[in-house]
Length: 391
Image (tube, rainbow, N blue to C red; front, side, top):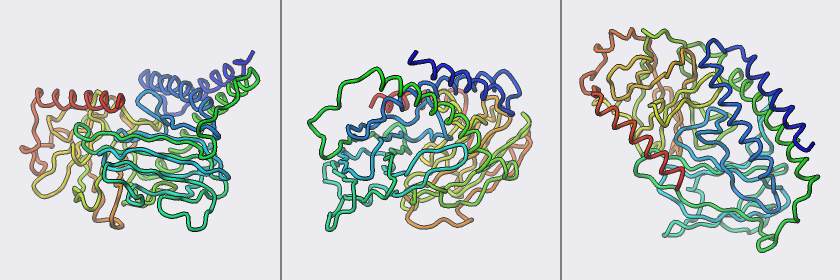
């Protein structure tokens, strides 16, 4: 049977999920099975998208197929490529805070991360006044001119990211890809042998995906002291114009993590965002709960600081970051499209505060929101995500 290997991979992936050491209650397991379902969907999608001669962009992750502590503010797309061919990317720049491209020489595995061979944002491009652009990626070409980027040896994946800061008022653009010498042609017809091979590939992707990102959190987060955040640093293996600050938390329900960070100027970091993640190393529900905030969504205090309140209980504050039942989880800041290197002074400070002492916070009264205001904030999130996913 063509699907036999994939069925076996699903069973193995479920065993890995069920044996994860962080599972402590029914919610943890239920979220793990949801994560498994999204990973099954994504693995099939990726296996059938592996087309380097007739490539197309596919959604790398989304609300229902999460991985790798996905950013709630980002639409991720990728296409498979080869290093000996030339590819043409055309599109129209939307009004999102950032648009970036990255070329990788492989995929993540349980033992290693791929190398980032090229990474840049659209400041490196010549974009027409109407927002349209054409970018080419291919073998080294003398005098190639602007908007041409050389593919290094081993180049195998092109990633594009559109990043939102003001969810309600920014619009996504358009992006397409084709191989320069196959446009107007067609791939050969499907064969049973190829379909069976793709089911086997999907199974390997599924198991590797589950193992990899359970290991990934150990590499980058869980060795850090709990309830702390690192200084801002260039994101390892990521975008050259992105800095991040990471950590993990462990809180009782009467404890609150108050994180204070300078609100960056737009000319320093047009995109700045904070989020929580579960121990499955994926974002929490950012559609129906405020588990993340961008600089545009957060309420800035008169002293120029943003004070996030990570709490299980509702504090009645604008910058409440909901734990949604997660005693433990991950903390992540991202600054993108930077115009200078960040210093420790640009980064966050963290303190644990008893819930009942929150009224002692600076500017507490200015941060207050009532239930009607909170419902409006959540409704705006739900509407904005629905709009951008159909854009």
